[in-house]
Length: 482
Image (cartoon, rainbow, N blue to C red; front, side, top):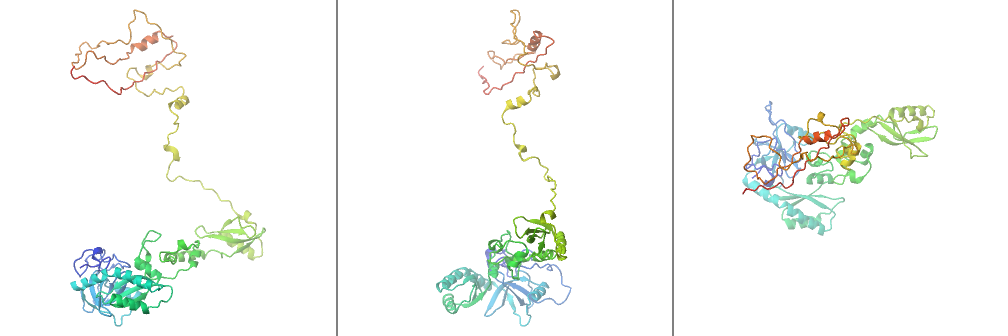
């Protein structure tokens, strides 16, 4: 047993209420079906003593009707009720109650004379019969289509609805021409063994029953909130300056979209300030006619009758002045002279961004290209060197040709880079983990710079280029047996 919140009688799409009384959440559960009316007076107590004894009952898809609560049963949105029908009884879900029912009855011009009645809240047996009848609707629709196709009838069976007690089945169909049902009803009655009712609907009502997603990305208006279908013709598209393209202007029903009527009043209001589109202007160069209208910019485009390739746009205020001059019998200047050149407005970068290629790496040629561009600059001037003193004490770099030649060291001179440098700290203790046969890394003492400077002219400043330090990829392994 379920309240049938989304699909009446289908427990797979209900909220799971296990009672025929329906759901207590009026705002969420009871308003999740097609063409629902939000009951904004549900939490407000009625100050008047006389309450509305009519309720709105929903059946399959968008079929609704109003019933009178003669037994004063406490009903609210979502209650499953058994109502009067012909023949037998039907089962539906209460979709609206309270004072809003009066407004809906007045809007749909429902007659209150001899209304149908509500028998009771649906019991367990009523709901089981109702759900069994709903399960037979889809296979019955397939069989009915096969029968109509075998008889050669030009019709399309859109939907099938069983009555709550299973005593009657209603077939909804669409057809362009009149259909002869004499043989069809005999076939249906002999196959389905129940009372047959045929109802013809329009293509818009068919789309409302089936539902779907429109070209705007939203659900179809006819299946969600639109109840009245006003006629839509091609003049609506012409007023809105739309191209007459049937593929773009037609909806899923194959007819013109209902949403073309939504903005029609605004367009008609704006076009009332425009001169007629059949306006002709008498100029000194010849006659000109209106070829285009822009409602938003309030402009009209004109072209000569003889040469319609060049278009000239004017404001509607200027066009009205030109029409007034023609009415006085005066010819206006040619369109080329009347056209005011458009002033190009400076573009403003709203995103505050630079050029598109700001993230790309420029000068991908390599280090040599940057080196040639930045001659005279030391590329390693920002690289730290622990073996040299402060930057201000270092000598400046000179060219290769100005470098001093290496002088031969005297026999008394000691080599700068010795194999085993002496330990400058006499108190340092030897490292027991260090291999005595392992040679320590060579160090560049500061004495070398001083000796090289001694062999150079003191007036000429020389700078020794710093040596690059390379990291060993494969450091020597430690011998644990040492």
